[in-house]
Image 1: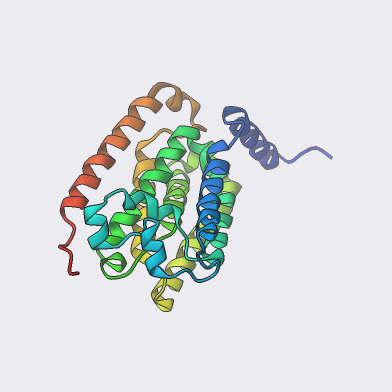
Image 2: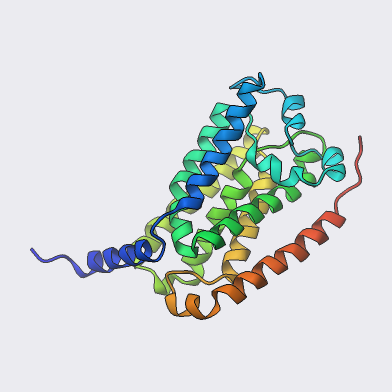
Length: 248
């Protein structure tokens, strides 16, 4: 029985992605970094399930008065987790979505999307949850990866196999919707970081060239990536100077 045309198109697309980016080494490195930090936390005596906020703060947690004095916490907090369950859920999401996004945008663009989305997630949190509580976790960066995938699915759907667009779009929107709902109802999830990462990832990816659109990527990838990163730096500086004054 001959292979249906739709299946052949999807198979050809996947094969081209794998040829363009053979190894998703950035995703593997990011998972290793997050797990490595958690293991270092455990070695220092931190609880594997329920670390104390003061301990997370000591390791670089995001809290307005501390972060205003030590801006490096904006990145450090994105590699800290409040226990094994928190880490496990985030790494499961990154492991599933990361390789796809990394092959959509290439290794280095994917790394930029991840790190900058984590930065904007931390900045957004400073206006809400992290004003009074310690905020940690890779979810802002992971939501940025989600936003980048959604940007491709909504803005370049004509260059992707239709069945892939339909299945990925529904699953990603369900992931975003469920996560935000959980945040609004549980009171312990930092939705500001989620939304900050989601919006920044979507915006970055909209500017950047996708690797599956090879003609555009080959001619404009570097210039568009520089524009995206430059715009992010300007937006981050503006957000930093707009932060509320510390109340502690």
